[in-house]
Image (spheres, rainbow, N blue to C red):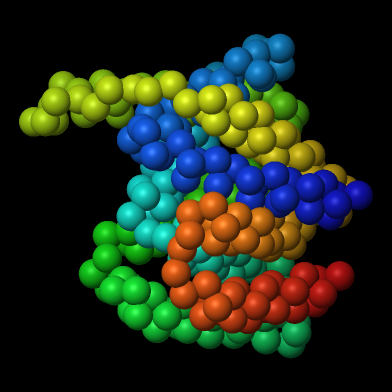
Length: 282
């Protein structure tokens, strides 16, 4: 059951990435994230409940990791084609798998190691394809933002495995969104106070509440999947990265991006690696 919850979460996550890219047309990164997160808090208000001080400190740390990952990831999406950014982001499960082995004692078989090799080969090919678009993986700030997002996102996923054992999924989700909103407000206030340029105005976009509904449902399914009996963090993380299929297809159609055939070949190799990792975990 937990696998199918992860699959449903993955599909919604793909639409969420497209919604964020769409919202960036009229607003900056922080405004987009704050708008979506505040709507998520509104939807999750009925599930806010009291907790211990220790639980809230744990969730504040979780919110910090998520905020770092979201801000850097959306900054990467802003400066890169969506098809490039999401394909690059899809490599995150490999890092989670390796760290899961080290921290939780999870072990990989031959098929899973073959999957890891394919994923790294796909990343190498993506770098060559991106150079044809004038994107250098070494010097492009969008790529650097995505790499920072991958690292902080992997840390957040590992933290989820730790905290889900002692807290209800909706308690985690609701309070984490509250703390993320607070952190984003602090970032916006700090930017307004210390930035030299005039603060950019906020423009309401109807896609924000819709995107908030999508990510709220996706995260709820993710946390319930993670709390399922026998659930493996490495497998759930890999399944969720299949969201790139939705993001890639819609990014190519809606945003008229280039070199789709080359990127589709890279994506196919990457997905083959993810499939091997999942099959090897069955």
